[in-house]
Image (tube, rainbow, N blue to C red; front, side):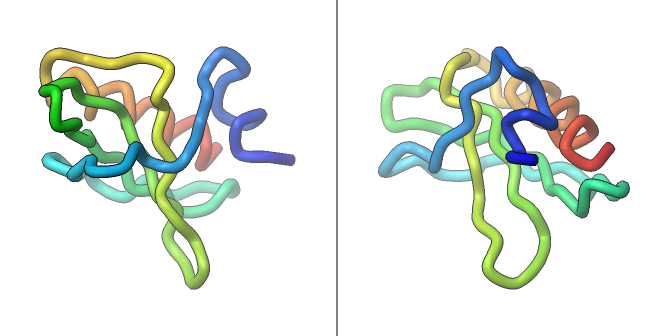
Length: 88
């Protein structure tokens, strides 16, 4: 099952936008769905997005670019929720 289906049908996941930078990284979340690390990703315009990356060879980061935040802590909080859902 694709990661997007495991997390939330209303969340669009894609590669992080070009030029974005991870500014906060949370603790790894583990479960039957794998190991996921949540993060807050900052854009050049000052917006923050929730991101996650799955731990393991050949895995890459995805970003929930459908919702932006004004605060990195808010983006990280949402990323932690997404990581918990992905790991479940």
